[in-house]
Structure formats: C-alpha cells, structure tokens
Length: 408
Image (spheres, rainbow, N blue to C red):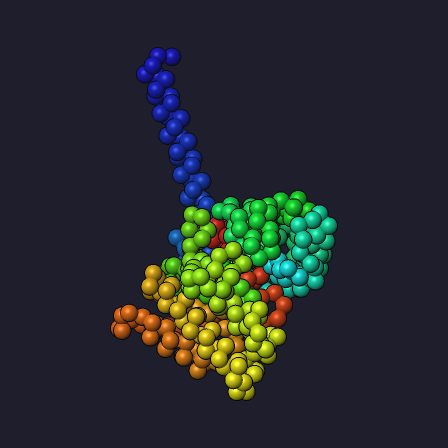
C-alpha cells in the first residue's frame, strides 16, 4: 500500500471513529433528556415526553425500556385513551438509587440515607468514641453496614442501588476526597478514607462538613444563587455558593473564614493560632467555656436564660453578636452576597435578634448604600442526622442526578 493509500485509510478510519463517537454521544444525550424529563415531572407517557423532548416515539420507547431495566422508572398503568391504544404511563423511581451520609464526631456518628429526590429514608446516631485504631474502624463500619442493611430492607431498596458513602468531617480534605489534610479538632490530620472503604465495599469519600451543609442548602432551595454560608455549631464552618453551586476551589479552601484572624493576638484557637473567628463565634465562645463566667451548659439553656433576662448571658450575647457581625462584615468586603446562617446557634436566634445582627453588620460596612441580607438556612434540621450529614448523603445523589440527566 502506497503512502497516499495509507493516508486515505487512516483518514477513513478516523472519520469512522468520529462518526461512531458522535452517534454514541447523541444517543447518550437523548437518554439524558428523557431521564431529565422523568426526573423533573416524576411521571409521563411516551407522548408526554415526545411533546417536550426532540426525540421520536421509537427512540423514546427504546430509552424507556433501558431506564426500566435499570430500575429508574416503572410502569404504572394506562392513561385514558382519546382514540386508539391507551398510552402507557411511567413513573420515576426515587429509591432506585440511594446515597449514604455519615458525620464523624469525637463521641459518635450520625448516619443518614436519602433517595434521588433528597428524601430522608432513615437516620441514626451511633455512640462511639473516635480514635484512629482498627477497633474503631471495625466498630464504625459494622454499625454503618447494619444501618444500610436495615434501611435497604425497610425501604425495599435494591442493595446494588447504593451510590456511595460520603463522610462529613470537621477538617480540611484533599481535592480527591481521599485524605484529611488538616484535622485539628479530632487530631486526625493525614487520615485516609481507606480504612472505611476497605471495610464497606462502597465508594467512599471525605467531605468538609461546611461544604456538605451547603450542598443541602442549594438542594432544598434551588433559588439560592450567590451566598456565603456560615454554620454556627460547636465549631464554625463556612462555604461559598456561586451560581447555585457550592464552590470549593482547587485546594478545597474557598470561603473558609473560620480561621480568618478576627482579633490579632486574641483567644487561642484549636488550629494553634490566636484570634480566629472560631475562637469568637463558636459554641464555646457563646457559652463562655474556659472563662469564669458561670455560663450555661448548652445553647438551649443559654438562650432560655438570655430571653428570661439573665444579665451575664446578655453581656456574653452582646459580645458574641459584635464578633459575629465583624466576621460577616469582613467576609462581605470580599464577597458582597447574601449570608445564610445555619447551625445550632442560628436555630435559636429570634427574628428580632437577626434584625439586630443585620444592623450591626450594616454599621460596619464602609459603604452606606450597601444592602445586607441575612437569613436562616432553609435546610436547618433538628435531632438525629443534621444538615451536614444530610448534605453528605446528597453528595453521591447530586453527582448521579447531574451526570444521568446531563445537568453536570
């Protein structure tokens, strides 16, 4: 074969490969559009889909058959006929895939399971002291597997539909989610996800707890566009939402303000520095832990005493609100966006206190015409498996929905 013939053969082969790839891409795009319709509308017939999606009825029928085999849709009977054969109706199956979220604390774990609609199927709290030992991982994973098995049986879920287990952790996480790069709270810097993955036989990943909480934020309120999330719990967590997505940045540190210096040379922080936002806006800061203030033993008790007129709580709360307002003002000097407040402390703030906090933030703004909008988290949860755990469970769900429907 001469050089010209060889070149023509290579060109023909390349053109054929591109054509095959293009057809495969088009086929996948059509399937995604059809699944997106079913996911959005929850039910529909071939005719309904054809009216909304640029696909022929035979193509729709082929893809519905595939989606049915995958368990993502099911037949639900026939619709009323207007002449001819009755249209077959289909329904989306939210429990076809399930995400699991786990939050790890010093004294236990919260576990949560959600379906593709983000509906919580089950949740549980496990009392278990954290320690970096084989015994801990054995006990933790046994408890997680027991939870998954019970949820699968109770909800009649196909075990093959478990998408993965996301671990919400109080620490910085590597971009691939495989390692904790800074774990000052639990002392687990450098911890790999491998001890969990090897015992659970599911995809596993670490997620910073503030990012997982923000994931729940945008899931339950799609209207959120640009916002800064501030979670006031045992420790402070923060995250940035831009264009309706949680933005973590290349090193997964975007929006983290908890270790921004608020008071140079101030109170000691668990990170080893002094004067961080966490040292002034955490639960310990509010309750006066570590200082001779006779503070309350819980956030609930603190606000009960505060609203009953306790003078010492009123002074502590005034200092706390000043520090919180300064932290928010500092953040808004970089990102002039709405601020979403979540966590245990925010849950107890009254409307009047939220208005007062807004006034304090506005008073620190150098531009008098700036608008300041503070609001509570819409994803705020009480009791077992809080917002971070819920958001962690949504991690694999969101990924699956985005990739399967072409929304990514």
